[in-house]
Length: 441
Image (cartoon, rainbow, N blue to C red; front, side, top):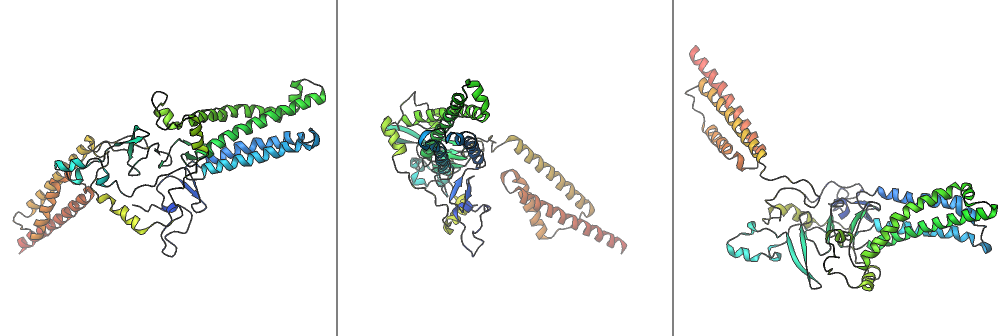
């Protein structure tokens, strides 16, 4: 069904008969704010932890360190220590919001699988196969800068992913130039926000180094003012010691991440490709040279989003969704163990032997129960001739029993059998009463 339960946010099809907006019926796992203007991942709550880990040390630095350094520099240069850390923190948080609150490059889902003319299997039609017997190929080969690259079919989004695209199991979307899903920003990192992600990580590294450095400056000024040792000066400002330890730990994390992504950008790789394909062992079709790789990341225009989350959902699109199951083309995974290959769930086979055995046991049990019931009716009134309607009903019941394992309407068959059993029981009681009345007369 195309329209799942509406997310909170008001105003959709309920008001004035208007169609809901795209963000209200979005089939991914994303969270939307300000009526679809901001899109976050399902783990958006971790964003508040990240903001706290940035703001808390900066506030401690401003109160216990920068405030005392204002008068320690000539020509009021001490004020700049406070101004720079505040401005840099605002800049860092802005990059964080640009990374986590925008579309990372989500590819819209198809409403139905690809049409047969777009499948590289047209020759199969000449072998006597019907469209219902066609199966979409699991992968396709495309050329990227003269190198063959395989693109995979996504069962969830019903499309062949473009090169460098992957399906995020957390957000449940196919993302262009998928790098990874970052829990610290609560969003996928892809084509449209990778630039801001790296700038955020690198600016956070610089902020840690800035706080770390001026904490040592403050300790040195205390030592020089009191003519004491560095250890005694450190005891005079415990806040500086805490900030030094905190920044030292953080800079290994964000600094190491900055260096790693600097290497990835210089070779035009993504995190996903680096761990999966190992381009250091084979040719990278996307590598254009170090300078061009950096220009591609930082100096090219960011493509517009392919999703208008605030647009109204067209009526015909919803109708196409309801007609989708009627199409006869098979997914690449039809006939294979059932499971979400993108989400990594444990597969369950269609022809599970245990399930088939349970159905056969149920069929035998119901068959014995029906035979027993028919025997009681025959004993109570051996010469009773049933009306034509009941005979037809009983024939239909036996035909349903014989095809129990071949039809999927199990619940309907059980209900029909129960009705027939009740009807036969009523006829038995009528025939018994009839026999008693005859003997009395």
